[in-house]
Length: 149
Image (cartoon, rainbow, N blue to C red; front, side):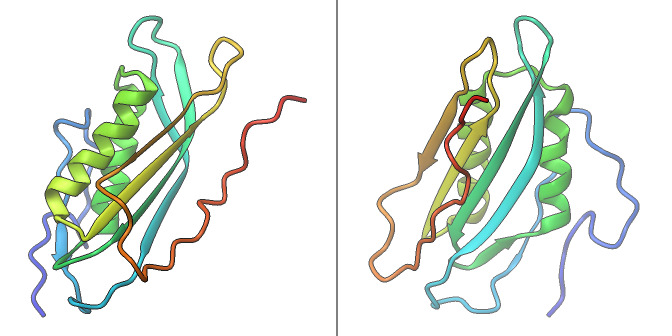
């Protein structure tokens, strides 16, 4: 299998914004098999578009691949490019989900954005492409609801 990736195995600087980030995909070695792939980004950061203050969250991306997988190095660089990007929690979470869905055309995809409190209130954002397919093992995303101390 020949991989046509632009970043894998090469020194790659962090993109300055999500719009400049390149997401690579690779062929799914098991097309036609229903399975779930999960990526968890436990230290996702962006900035508030109004105040410029940092926002922190956990992103959990679950998808059932069709013909393509997202190449993980490109995904890491893409997600880390949000660190200086001003956007609300909803925009970050749903935007990541939609960009991956467009790139991969998966059988199914969902994303959970579990954001730490801003102004004393946590915001959790969830998006999926459709109802999960019958027969797909779908574990809990594993992030407990926020509990104050």
